[in-house]
Amino acid sequence: MKRITLAVSLNLFLAGVGTIQGVPTEEEKNYPEYVEQVFLTEAGALKSVFPVTTTVKKEIHTFTPAEKERIESKLGWILNEKAVTVYKGIGSDGKAQGFAVIAEEIGKFKPITFIVKAGMDGKVERVEVMVYREAVGSEVRRQRFARQFRGKSAKDPLRINRDIINVTGATMSVQAMTAGVKKALIILDELYFKK
Amino acid sequence: MNKILWKKIHNIFGLSSAIFLVVLLITGIALNHPQLYREKRIEALAMDPENPQKIYSGTTEGLFYSVDGGKNWEEVPMLYPPQEVVDIAFSPNNSREIYVLEKWGKIFNSMDGGKIWTTLNLPFDPQSEGIELKQISVGAGGLALLTSNGWIYSTQEGKNWDLRQFNKNKRTLSRLILTLHNGYFFGPMFVWLYDFSALALFILIVSGLFLWNIGKKTG
Image (cartoon, rainbow over all chains, first blue to last red; front, side, top):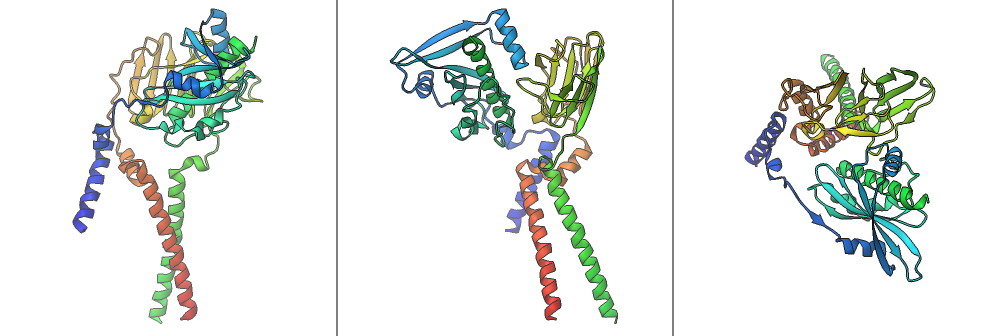
């Protein structure tokens, strides 16, 4: 028993020395470089956000320089995208039921793909993670986290730890998701709701 | 007589050690979890070279600005706001060009007086590699960044960095001692194990004092 304890202590100490000296530990060596978890396909995501919609119309919108400038000004951030694909849900009565955007934002190293659906009032109705590519932090796909965005609009600041509660151990993913939702809302506001 | 004196000295020393240990344990746990009590603290301050009413302040909670000489402050709105700002610098050539340094993160840059921001690429990941960003200096066409592992230099707006004065794998003795002390030496989860041990020791001290008091009463 004493030998086991001694061996465990020695291993922990050596692992610690390895970390401090920049030598990769066993965990680091075995850390998967690329883990892709697909939770929803495009069709599945659209079905999830438009459950009772008859048709979903896909619109690709290329930003004009004036739109880009207004969006960047509202975001306080450079907009790298040249265009956005918006999915418009249309009910059996022919009326629009809301808009959805499939967004992609970098988490720690890899992009997170998710869908943001806003109602006709410009407020978030549903957010769903479609593809998660990091080894850790996939807790953001749970509705317990994603539900926090419901009811938020382009006017809401969406500050982490104030408006959106962080998930311990998934801070970068939370930042990415929050930024992605905010960007989607501001784009939708600029293209559809403001008019 | 001697026995009683020695017992009293022993009791005083025991109590002093217990109080010392309790202080050590509580402050140790508090140091490991600064987010529980940390107040907003200003770490950096910079005035617009062309407008003395416009001041930026970098705090432990982000980047703030004032347009009335510091009477009222607002958080600088941006998509990815910085968490802990340690330095702010204006370009000497153009006061609309601003650089903001996040302690364990990125260099934020605005070219239009703080309306639209972006981040500059760094040749390392400060957070996961434990490299602290300390100070940024902006010259005519150049950027110099001081880190805990040396300094780096760029003449291409952060697109490429000169790393000759930088050692990615540098680890100081003080860091080794600190990580041994707080538990991070063995990995982040060990901080909780350290805290658990500290709490166990605290309970041991309190229950020891309680038992000692009972023993004193019953003789």
